[in-house]
Amino acid sequence: MSTTLTIAGLDVSFAARTLFTGLDLVLADGNVTAVVGANGSGKSTLMRTIVGELPIESGTIQLAPRDATIGWLPQVVPDPAESLLAYARRRTGVATADRELDHASTALAEGRPGADEEYAAALERWLALGAADLEDRLPQVTAKVGLEVAADRPLGSLSGGQAARAALVAVLLSRYDVLLLDEPTNDLDARGLALIVEFVTGHRGPILIASHDRSFLDRVTTHVLELDLAQQRIGHYTGGWSEYVAARDLTRRHAREAYDTYAAQRDDLLAQARRRDDWATKGHRNVARGGEPDKHVREKHRARADRQSAKAARLKNAVDRLDVVEQPRKEWELRYSITPGPEPAAVVATLDGAEVVRDGFRLGPVDLTVARGDRVAIAGDNGSGKTTLVKALLGEIPLTAGRRSLGTRVRAGVLDQRRSLLDSDASVVDVVRAELADTGQQEPDRGEVRTLLAKFGLGSEHVDRPARTLSMGERTRAVMAVFQAREVNVLVLDEPTNHLDVAAIEQLEEALADYTGTLLVVSHDKALVESLGVTHHWQVADGRVTVSRR
Picture 1 (cartoon, helix red, strand yellow):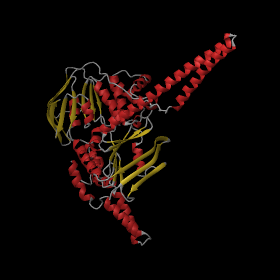
Picture 2 (picture 1 turned 60 degrees about the vertical axis):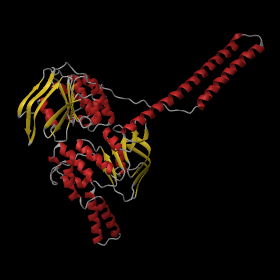
Picture 3 (picture 1 turned 90 degrees about the horizontal axis):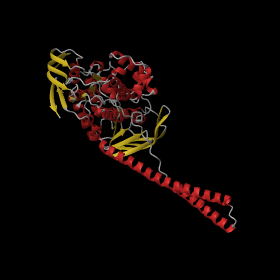
Picture 4 (picture 1 turned 90 degrees about the vertical axis):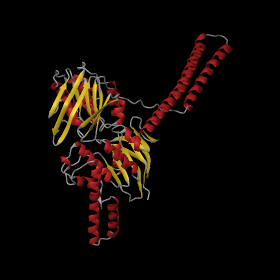
């Protein structure tokens, strides 16, 4: 049986702020619809409204058939004490289905009225969600994603890469009819991305996805729903990300051209009307002040002035008859840059026969050289040793064997995945001041820091807040402001696009494209890597590094 989710005339607000109004959307079997928009435009709020976590203010949401299952799988911070099995049961809806079936079983045993129907519905839902064989499927799926841990393993004991795979396991185990996936590709490596692509394209029912991964969207989506907060409009497009961008840009260009044409016609008519009014005014004034004794001549001049007034009125009426075209709202686009300081030595860093052995993992032996101006992309599966390699290169962890050297005048700036510098209850301005003082610079006053942060789009509404309340995009800009102040000449970025919206990613891409220092980027974001003019690729697998030149 086919499944359809129909949304009609939906208005959504959050914290007294209207996000969008009048949303109409139909999701049918085989549809993979990407919902795109800047952070705060309502993507997650829409999903929460669909699953009933938030009330419907206006409009309707209908699911056919009514007993179809619908699941929202957002990015969440798991309970460290929760086991992998308990996490999978909760995320797939099986835990809730178990409780509903137990309740229905009790009602049936007690002979309550309507218990038969309640039990039949609960059992059908329990079976539909895959509860009967979930524990049997779990080891198969964990093996498929490369997560070799026991089902009773607490999530808090997993590494970052393992936690990302655990989240993927929950998605792959899901058997909802309708799936709402909120940033499903965050923290996934190439293997995980391939599996999520296979799962999404093979899912029979409708899927609604919010994702920043443009390459992923190109591979899986059939439609795009745009929530344009700046323009206060909703856009519907067919195809993947690339088709959406082309169609969106064409729509915006046509809107600007239509307004320009309308404005030119309006302004020309109004200018003509003003000229006619001026001529009429001068004519009437000349008649009144001219002292012309001949009455017929005076009437002739007055009639000529009246005709100009009449023509001006007709021109103004023509303006009123024009089909009004609203001026497209001008979207403010942030641009920031990072200017490197004095050049480092020609050889920035080297590893010679370097090995690192820690927690049962071995990296190396590795022989690598980073030259001034190199732009290096580092890739590999989660757990392959990418972060360990970067830390070994920068001297952040000791070598078990081999040698490491760091060139003179190297000023490295490291952007970690979590932007941990901003994981503080102190204000943003105080965190940045303290960081600059810790790097040996003279501590700037608060005004200087405010000016610095403002250049990166962080104004008065941001800088006095607790740093941990910033979004990931805002945290990224704050760290980049620190790098600018420090004049770093080597940038090291570890999965810099995770948890960023597309606008923030594009801002970062532009800044990195213009950066003239040395760049090392750990990223699974193909679109980002392709935009950076990479000179070298380092592929890390099982603690070994393969180097290739672009």
